[in-house]
Amino acid sequence: MKHREVRELMTREVVTVPNNAPFKEIARTLTEHKVSAVPVVDPAGRPLGVISERDLLPKSAGQGDYFRSLPEREAWQEDKAAGTRAEELMSSPPVCARPEWTVAEAARLMEAQGVKRLLVVDDSDVLIGIVSRRDLLRIFLRDDEDIRHEIMGDVLDLSLRQSASAITVAVTDGRVELHGTVDFRSLIPLIERLCRTVDGVVSVTQHLGYAIDDTNSA
Image 1 (cartoon, helix red, strand yellow):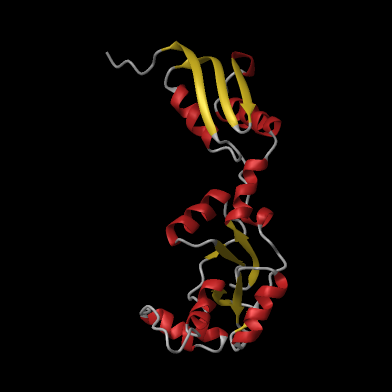
Image 2 (cartoon, helix red, strand yellow):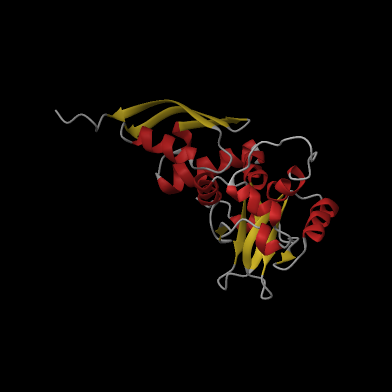
């Protein structure tokens, strides 16, 4: 099975700012390009960090009414509020991915790091793209017939050598249903697991029988 790679989903034209970019230039860049975050890069194009709207917010929060007490802020918020350049405002180090990673690999890193986007770098660690949560969700827009064709061909025929005529595959809105008979009982959980790994599959329900019970050790 061929899984979609980050290079197929990432945005290649990435808006960036240099590490010495002033606060107002960063705010202007976010507003003009209608993005919520921007990578900070060195002169060679290697990412140093990311500045999001959240990183700029402490500056606004610090401009409250002089006579009205504000809630106490954490140390990082005070540092961000005092920052005036990108290198002082950015969140660092950046969380990066490689273009050849699969969607699943990228999604696992996003979840583990608790980030909304990954910077994509080449072998020289130069920024070549950015991939967001929304980009990764695009795999679920795959056509049902494409998913069915991949399951029939790559999972059942090529990987497991199961006769296509013995198993019926139906896909509706990414939900897969399997009906029919397999050679061995031990194949059923394997088929179900492999179907779940196909890009765009939302769920798998199987109603499969078997010719030989090879799980009985008695």
